[in-house]
Length: 141
Ligand code: ZN
Image (cartoon, rainbow, N blue to C red):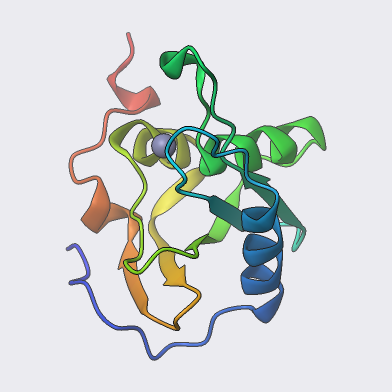
């Protein structure tokens, strides 16, 4: 059963918040102005972060979550246990549909996805809530 959205009272690993906010500062958001940082914690208790990287050819832009997952895979980890998506904008920013699927490739349905902003707004969802009935390896022949 999917966990309902909440304002989140459960603890978040402080390292994730720091890593995501630092990554946000380095975002390349020249076109949208929407800087986003993402940080994830792996089963090996390592933290990986990423920023969004926009491009003049818009479809070539990369989300912060994708950048963080790329960093994780580069270092040989494959299991996400918690993720923070951080922005300086007035509203927290949820992962796009594509990134929900990217996260699902490396996370179980109960993994918590925290959305934070610089003003201290926080919402926490389970991955299952954000991406119910996800396509997965089980669906491949
Ligand atoms: Zn995305």
